[in-house]
Image 1 (cartoon, each protein chain N blue to C red):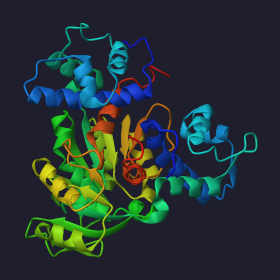
Image 2 (image 1 turned 90 degrees about the vertical axis):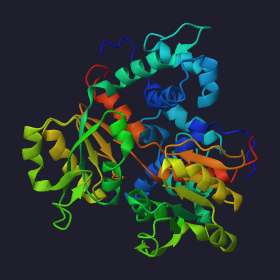
Image 3 (image 1 turned 120 degrees about the vertical axis):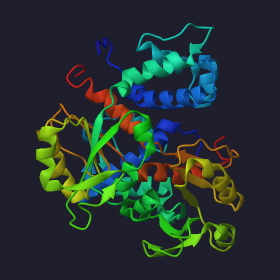
Image 4 (image 1 turned 135 degrees about the vertical axis):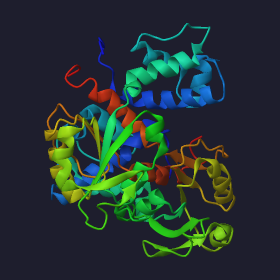
Length: 213
Length: 213
């Protein structure tokens, strides 16, 4: 936690990608990898990789390559994945259900501890082994169980109010799927997920296939 | 389509964000915005914005600001959103359902024309006004209806084969939610969506709140 250099956002956003790729290498029983080989796989230049890693002390010897398992574990620790953050999902619609059942979260060490909704037809049903709770019990729940991250899959019109309620109970991070910008104090970390963005990027790219390469 | 400069990936990835922000401004009936004001809203430097826009001819007069509606429409055209790409979803589980019902796609001009699955319990059910079709009719469907983008929400183990089948029928773009890297020819554009990535970024950021700002 004793970072000296401020790590740029773009570097932070690359850490999960490094972590995923290194996990794939581990699964393939690859023990060592050079920054050059990692660079080819990840479509990032080797010097970029070395620069990125230097924010965290470097990790490896040049020429000899990186120890995959060590690097995987170190990046996992930097990301805090070894600490097993607890999460809740607010909004048990299709997207909430999909996320509750998403094995990737569990694989990364996140623990889903509660699912909330306001729809009487949904409250009490079971998703991923948890009973959907009435949103009116949100504060009560959060006063008893420590939650690190709230995942928001509620309609756009409801999200600001729900976010404020969660944050008031001490939750420090929000993953927001609700396509509305949240207005919250600086000591809350928010990641907005916009599923239309990669779709629009794709729309751009299919029009230029063959033209730019 | 007569791009002269190769536009860097990071710039392309920012276009959907510009488009979203400009859409918000339009909704707020804001007619003009300076790169400085846009910069504050988007947390991108003003010079970055000018640099990005210069890849596409600039769009506005310095000092006088950008015409919001003009800029919104121009970026929409660059992204190809005015052409109304047709899409199919393969995999009608929770995530497929959530995406089929996601109003953001339609709002950006994308038209969902088919949903496919292999599960007999799901085939024939209705999602977003469409009957889920048996995946065995995929090729037949694609030979009759032009599809621009395939959205893949099938299990990891199935995705490579499904992707190959779709691409063989002439689909040029794939939005892949299946957490497996696809191995396809260069003339197909693929955007991989990794929902765990922003979750991991969040995990990093909640541990450093107050330390870096």
